[in-house]
Length: 355
Image 1 (spheres, helix red, strand yellow):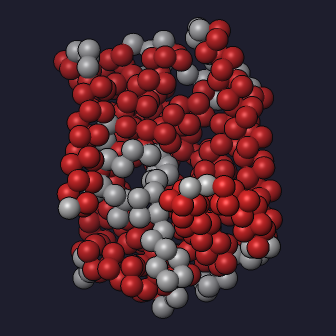
Image 2 (image 1 turned 90 degrees about the vertical axis):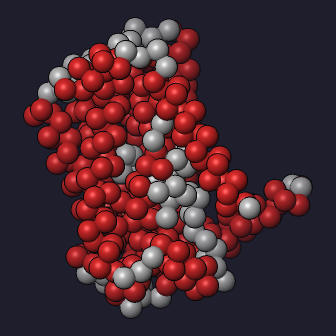
């Protein structure tokens, strides 16, 4: 029954976000704008988006080193399958399928392989906050036309994000070397929380601890953090080239503001981030950069298609020969992983954005 209620909630959220995105738009004008995008910039967006999976694979190989040396081909295949399935289906099944496929092909410990996904997601969150805060605090995001109060609020939010990201980086390396620190930090909080909230915090702590149990090497984490920065700068570049293809006056530094909004938009667990992705980019372009709604909608539709459609199609070609169903992989994950690393990110986020 819970599964059906979740499915209904996802459908309602998808339809609601799409209705919000499409409200007030002239669909004929939007289609005209979609066809009028600069083909060279859109091709550059497509090529850069494809390159993101290579960078993600390199980072994952680095995080997997304490377990074993994963072959690039197998890691790339699993990465594309995982992100492609999450682009097509609700509830992010790719976050279960991706490590399962790799562990099966390489003969790795299943629980340890799943645990690296926890580290990946933490690195993604920290990196996005760091880039959002750093770039908007130290550079001009081009918000002169925005309401001065909104501009000031964005600057304050960026500064807080930058500080929070730096603290998070420090905690990441601290917990990697001394896992008992996390328990020491959370223990006073758990004591004063209601039982359900305490259980939630404890469950989250278990996931984080199990993830860092795999990576106890600060050098590995440092290298993975560098690749995370490279990855998310490339994602921001994809956003910038896509909106520039529709002649929207957004400076490159402004793409980090849009990236922050997109991360929030794709956190809604709709299939392929439909609705949330579109609405987030549209709001960012119209509210902060005074973009015409039709142009903003066209940029959102095309960037979403570039980000999700190709990887979804390729993943189907790669997934079918695996001879496994998503349901079987989910059951295997629950059986093999839950005792050590509880259902990692079964309802968590896709990164990126755009990728």
